[in-house]
Length: 231
Length: 387
Image 1 (cartoon, each protein chain N blue to C red):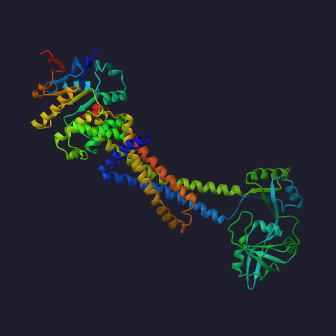
Image 2: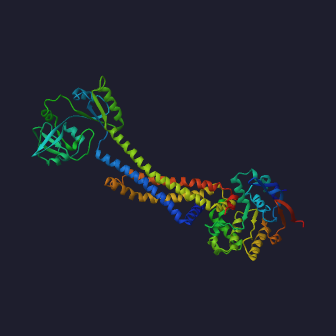
């Protein structure tokens, strides 16, 4: 499978709560190809966030193998995982998760600082990302708390794109936004996907599934329905 | 390349400054702790140093001399023993001195004085004149110490009576402080001839011999060879190296300084703990932020750098302020304890301020180390989930 960008084999994640073992994921097999737009759906507690964390290398499986671009992530050290995330994965969160002490444009520049891009190139790239995410340049020097939810999420998207990731992971990206703003954010993701970026969205909002070409439904840590592509 | 690096590291500085500003009061309080600690260390160091300098000052110019006294049981150092001294190498000069104590009278007043009989050349090496001139050999002149001149109200040309003989004052010495070999301030210096006339009945020989060594480094070896030569069979002389006395006084005051600095260090230690506390609180509060940064690609080293930068900024700023205020602190303790502040700007005092500032910075960094390490080792997922 040369074009599979995410490959999960029999992935299990067990949390121990007191004497109980809880299976957040139970033997999940999943392959996502380069350029896919995947929606992961399911009720709360179905394991969809855990699945996203696995793909985002924020968490490691109890059992099974997670491969990103062909690399088995369990073989990587903490700092190697960080580098993998930095160079390959862009995160978009429900809470936007911008750094409050940094201005909008500095938030976008932050991942580029970590990848040691030089200051002039960084600023140029950040401005073009502002443009790409439909953000007005006049907001560049605003702090996150001076921006609306939609603007903050656009900044977060611009930040996610900073190091030209191959995968965008979005956890309920419209969860804190009104319907109209949510739609524009999804259009932005759709647009990115059309340029070749793999987009994976976790949501329980049925409408978001319409943007994707594959929808995965999770329940009790297991995939019970996968649709799209050939449908 | 270099320019780029400074800009990207400026980002860390900028971020650290903003984070410190987020909790201004807390930052200032932590900084005050360091400031007080630095002042405490520096002022205590300055106080100890000033004590040492003031004692060293009143000891006078002890220098590196070797003083040879007759041992217990021996009355004098004989001419023959002095000849032996000349055979020891590396000696610049030897001054044999006759000494006794006598009553000095002028007009209706009298006082006890050390009477020293020695050659003009020797006198020239040992003391400094305030006015007049040194003795002419064979004369009945005398040179007197500053205190004696003051106490008996003696002037040049006055006739001083010592043990029923009259001497003409031809020189008055500068005040020189307490000496280890001689006490010139209250003394009367006369020629050996005059001395022998004054004390006809005492044994032939000298009461002490001052040996000046060519090079400071040879003092101990010369003292050793003197011992070897003169005390071959039995102890006939006691050899005293004045420099070693100065050194032991120095050692004592170094211990006092160290003790005082130790007291000051306690406050700096407390300040370090408060930095630790403040930074730890800040790490907890920013757990989520750390998680975000780790998610978007901050390595452990970069998180460590961010937090250490904050500790460094507090440390450098507070320590420098403390360093400047230490001049004030040093002034106050010197005035309170020594009643004078002239030693405040001595280079060795300034060194204590430099040391205080350095310790302040080091303490801040040490206090920041654990929180920074803790932050850098947070797992991104745990940190992201933290609310």
